[in-house]
Image 1 (cartoon, rainbow, N blue to C red):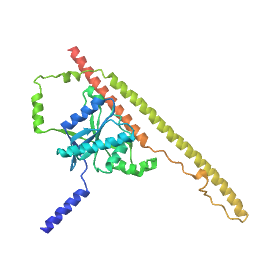
Image 2 (tube, rainbow, N blue to C red):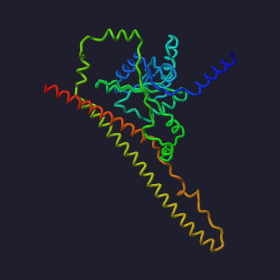
Image 3 (tube, rainbow, N blue to C red):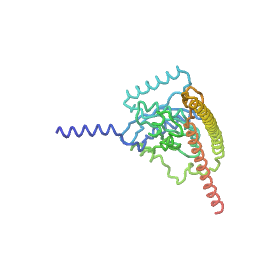
Image 4 (cartoon, rainbow, N blue to C red):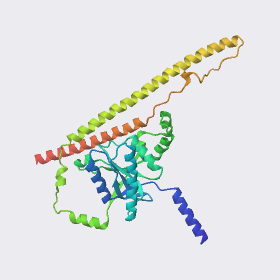
Length: 337
């Protein structure tokens, strides 16, 4: 009996020490509707909210959520927001609703969510919650018939680099780290209770074609493409500015290396003359000399995030353009028939 108890405790401690990787985010349909309603009501203003649920093995269950009040940068308003969160958690606990924080949700505009602020929020959550996710919802894609819901987490390799604060080119090459390794997208599974599923079955119409099916054939996506192109051009400008920073750094580095070589050549010539005169040679390194002060290399984090956004905008443009071509070919075939 004692052996069985010991093995059971060892299994528990082993499970706690090595948590299985997160495979899927299972979210209740009611929580999805709350997120959509909150983000759509305040669009285009960006809003956030808290995700509540349970962490069960490799599945992160999101069973409820509540919105955060729209706040400014004032410290008093931020304190009120923190008190609001605590009060909401207390009220939910009193009515026996899941009140375990598993992350947060936020709205975005055309998928432009890859920012330093998002990473800092992730790191703040990671201090208290080992496994948390951020659910991103884009209300601008709802007009295209797309449920733009995405669950993200930071990769372990990126968090290790971020804690070290070293995003130099040498460190990134050593870790074999690229801009695609910052975020990890977790599959989302929407679940409903048996009663809700039965009720939704009753709501389904008997008509073979609904209005939503006709809306999908709408081929006018000019505003969406224009906005994506504007965001893409802005990101390319930002990326060009980041490249200019690196070019300026490498020019200064080359200039400093040339100055160091000239100084060393001069010092060696001087030491040769001092040896001929029987004097002690001077050291060939002078830390107090400003030309030997290392020039800090700019962080590559911002350029990685901008590259992520550029890739996202290009993917959206490619997807919408491909759907439009399919609609045009379908419409052409219908006219010919």
